[in-house]
Figure 1 (tube, rainbow, N blue to C red):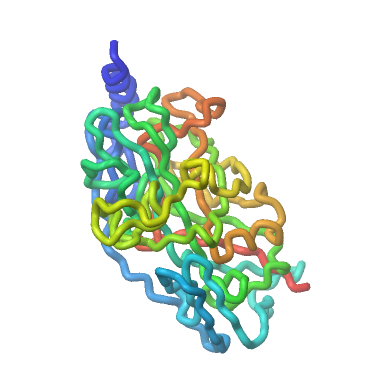
Figure 2: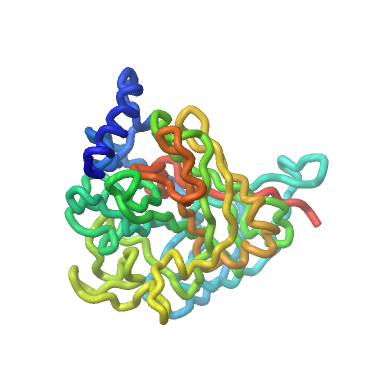
Length: 358
């Protein structure tokens, strides 16, 4: 029996148990697709376009901005915050953020939210059956390494070596957050002094197929240097006009041009190997939805938050249980993976910071 036949039998049986559900792969309406090599049919529906109105504040800080030389500019969801890639520098005047008494607990702490300013998927995952890039729907008849995924409403994260399903490769998600003067900026309360952040968690809307996956999963978190900046790019479009792909930080002006800037270092390592590793985090899901991710394993926020200010926080799938088998030892998160919503959806990722008065 060849691998393709084994895969079809394995996953066909797994999905058969979920056929009584109207949509066994996802709980939400999604514009994504399963791995055609490991699932006998595609489960794909569309997310409606939703405009996210920027938050308003009654008394925004006065800011003056000096912008580093760059090929791209990313404007955050806050009216008064702008980050400029690849290394945004923004000066701010006025008072720094502290809890103002609203929502402050007995320990003098409160929670503030930092909405993602930009996000993208970087992937080299390819379906071994027909060569399609399976990160999103519709699949593309071109290698994922040559595609830009910046404007998708959602996409799959997976890590597969081709032995579990017909997909081989990895897809990661890079997140940029609004900053001012080297500090994260909350949606409603302005800049957050890093030293006042006691803890952080990442809230994402992410779904998985309970018929295939267990509720225990692992992700690895990384920092992407400010000097390796990226722009969000198009919606699953071929790498062009500077938009990044898994291969290129910056592409040529036209589709098919050589990379202007590679992700590789001098030893030609792939993008995931040039990221700064922060920590491996155990996560848990419930009813097919990923719960918020406690970032305590990354250590003190004072140590790692400066690494993502001006750069990116990268979420990479590490391992999961698939069809009852634990792939932690092999560090595999088999395809189709887990579907993450993006900034363009109606449930964008965000950091929630517990901030305490000095």
